[in-house]
Image 1 (cartoon, one colour):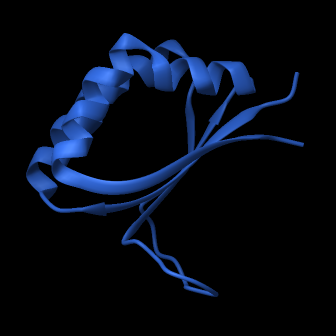
Image 2 (image 1 turned 90 degrees about the vertical axis):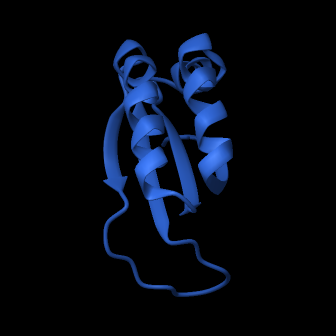
Length: 95
C-alpha cells in the first residue's frame, strides 16, 4: 500500500496556545497511524519563502492521511491552530 504524507509549513504566533493544538491533535494522529518524520527541527532555506516550522507526517495510506485531516478529532485541533498559527498544508502520495 502506498503511504500518504502531510507536509506542513507553519508560523506559530502563540507558542503557549500551540501546545493546546498539539495536545488536541494527538488523538487523531494516534487513530490514523501518524508517524512524525520531521517536526520543527533545524532547516536550511534553499529556494523560495520559508516558515519557521516544518512538519512531515507519514500515514499508512493516502486515504488515512486525508481521513485524519477531515476527522472530527483533527478538526477540533485545526480550529485551535487557525487561531494561533498560519500554515500551508498538503497531502501527498508516497512512492
